[in-house]
Amino acid sequence: MLEDNGERVIPKEMDPMNNMLLEHIARYTFSTPYVKGRVLDIACGTGYGSVMVAKERKEEIDEIIGVDICEDTLQYAVHNYYHPLLTFQQGDAMDSELPQHIGQFDTILSFETIEHVRDDRLFIKRMYDLLKPGGTLVLSTPFGKGRNHPSGSPFHYFQLTSEEFSSLFEDFTDKEIFYQRGVTIEPPREGVYYPLGVAVCKK
Image (cartoon, rainbow, N blue to C red):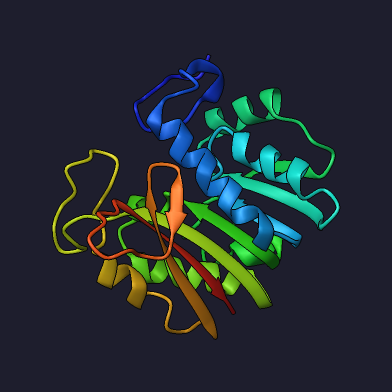
């Protein structure tokens, strides 16, 4: 059994009304209208979201690859979430040679990943390099005090401010920034507190 370290989402071991689980499922649900062609789910974790997207968009995608750095997590994904269009591979999102190993993609999903790396700007460059021209990146992260302030989470290097988050995507030809509150992902409303941001960007 895969260890629950407090950061992993393991749906089969969680209360179906667990807030973290519902928020993660909401992000995958939000992403599906953008998903097409060759798809990468980077830092896919246990694989529940990858298979969810594969089932939902089976007519619109050619294949989906779930990549994660943790071998134990990938083994769990392989044994628990199967779809004929889905494969899982080990890889590091920050590896500059990753495009040479797995190619480029029409769609990249990156949920709750960027706060786990030291250099958020370099992470975005890595995602940009993995996208085909015209490809779409859907990326989320929790907000916090900013990149110059250590996060209170033992798993996160930092948590960006909403302004820092929005400014990350200047190299993309188009971007939309949405905000998440529970299972709701929407454009910002005045006076509403949003703990998470979701960007949809086109190369």
